[in-house]
Every structure is written in structure tokens, then in C-alpha cells.
Length: 365
Ligand code: SAM
Ligand code: SF4
Ligand code: SF4
Image (cartoon, rainbow, N blue to C red; front, side, top):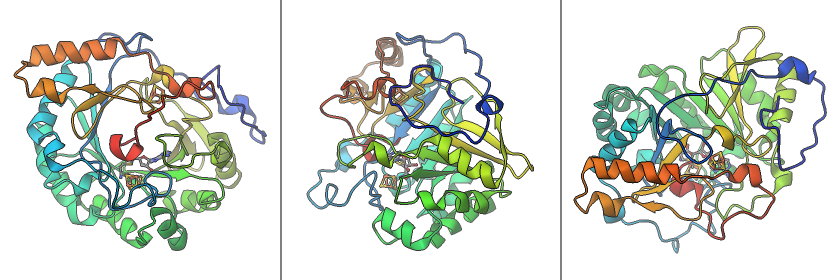
């Protein structure tokens, strides 16, 4: 099931499923639009609207590093909704077709539905949100009415004690499950549920999660624990390879691979043989997908990042506030993308990491 022919980390693979039977078909190449130095187009824009969060997930914002002393961005630092929309509009001119709002916790940004409404006015984009779900019951309906297409909810465990331990603010899992239901009631379909799997922490719940969401219409996705940022004490032995996740679920609920929707889709998709729906795995560590990485990221205070593992961004806010017109902004963004040659995950293990990696809670995944 490997698309990447040169994985850089040797991950043990026991095979109970014949690999040949499970090989996904590689998607076709896109054409047109601005390309980076490795030939990749821009398809997605991820917009982080805040670096603050109401959770302290141990793999993302460990409490000892994100306590009172942590310097969060001030309100004045943040891009305004008008500035964010302007960037999105220009990015669409460069090929972006999918815009995702993220954070920190995006639902902490006041009146987020207003931003959704403003982005909705840009023709031709799919508009999605990634949230921890804590405030979703409160906001689902307004977000839907504002024109949000899709929601992804992060949920790392169904077991309440495990969930509370992982979010580290003692938040009950029942409230997130209520948020997921509220999203369905508000009219959202194809909701994705993201579970970051950390060995010895929540991997015991993989099959339970699969069982719970089978047949629900929601797409459960398992994410390998990544070495983003400098604070989460990442260790390779805590990564549960996507192959193993698939094997564990397949043993209980047989699966077959599904073709990707488009080039750059990061999740490998699998379907239950009995028709109970679909799951996905995001094998960012064991099967790096840099060659298909078509994501541009905008930080809360207006820096462009061309990779999750970058050490620094490109200052767009100064340009936005200096009177540059859209053509100038577009040309500059195109030049940033054209110079891009990031492929950190493919080179992982070769000591290519910048000294100063940005945090996931700042850039939004
Ligand atoms: N707060 C929102 C949430 O949790 O959905 C949005 C921002 S969060 C940074 C985006 C996604 O990144 C979440 O699904 C989260 O689980 C994932 N994430 C955070 N740290 C990670 C890590 N070290 N490895 C893999 N995924 C991670
Ligand atoms: Fe958890 Fe998301 Fe907050 Fe990170 S940003 S601590 S993943 S809820
Ligand atoms: Fe994209 Fe960077 Fe992740 Fe590779 S390491 S998939 S280039 S964000």
C-alpha cells in the first residue's frame, strides 16, 4: 500500500493482508496553475485563525509549555476577516479550490461564522473547518447557515478517561459527541473524525472507534503522530504505522482500498467490504506524501508557510497593509510558491529539520 517509493524510516511491517490486494491506485496529475520547484500545484489553503486553544492536547500543546508564560499572539497581531478573505481570493486566482479554517481552536475566534459568510462569496471553493468539537453544538447551525460545506472534528478516544487525559483540560468526550450530532442536525454531511494515534496512549481504542463510526456516515481518519513543533516530545516508537491501523481494523471489519478523489489528497481511503462506509489513514510519517503536497498555509498573523515543518514563514501582512494591490500580492504569493522545495517528511531522519520548527497549534495542521 506504499505510494512513496523512498520512505526514509524503516517501519516494521507484518503482513496478514496480502499487500498486492490492498494497493491503492495512484491518482492522475493535475495540470495548469502555478507550480513549485518539484512540480506541485496549489490546491488547498489552510487558514489558522488563532493560536489559542481551549484544550491542551498532550501531543500538540503540552500544558507545561503552553501555560501562563507562553506568549500567544495579541488580538492586534491577527489578520482581520477582510484581510483573510483578500488572501483567499488571491489564492483562488493561483489555483486554490479548497479552503480550511483551523487554529488553535478556530471556534474561539469571535464571530467565525461571519468569516465563513465572507469566504462563501468567493466562487468555486469548498469551505471546511477543523475543530476539537468542544464548542460545536453552540456554533454548528450558524456555521452551516453561513455556508460552511464540511466539518472535521478531532476526537482521539471514546473512552472518557483517556479522552480527558489527552485533552488535558478534563473535557468530557460526551460533549464532543454531542457536537458531532449537532453538526449532523445542522445539515453537515461527510463529516470527518480525526484521531491522532499515539502508541500506549490511545491505540487500544482504534477498533472501538471504527466500530462506533461504522455506518454513521462520518469518515473516521487515523493520523500518525507527527514530529511537528518542538514541544510534544515526539518519539518514533509512539507512532502507530497506518499499515498497522488498517490491519487491526481489517481483522475485525474487512476493508478494501478506494481510489483518491484527487492528487494531493493526503488520506489513503478504505471502504468496509460490508458497505458500512469508509475510513482513512494519514501516514505522514511512515509513507510521506510530500510529492503530492499541494497545501499553502496562512498563519493567524499573516505569514505564509509552505510546509508544516518550516522554521519560518513569509511575511504577507506587511504587504497587505502597505497598499500593495491584488496583482502585486498575487505575484508575490506565486513567487513564494514557485520557490518552494519543501519535502521534510521524505527527508525525515536526515537531520534536515530547521532549528526552529513552528507549532501545530499555531499553524493548524
Ligand atoms: N484545534 C482544532 C482541532 O484540534 O481539530 C484544529 C487545530 S489542530 C492543530 C488540527 C489537527 O492537527 C487536529 O486534528 C489534531 O489532532 C492534529 N494534530 C495536532 N498535533 C498533531 C501531531 N503532533 N501529530 C499529528 N496530528 C496532530
Ligand atoms: Fe488539541 Fe487542536 Fe488544541 Fe492542538 S489545537 S491542543 S490538537 S484541540
Ligand atoms: Fe507537505 Fe511539508 Fe508535510 Fe511534506 S512535510 S507533506 S511538504 S507539509
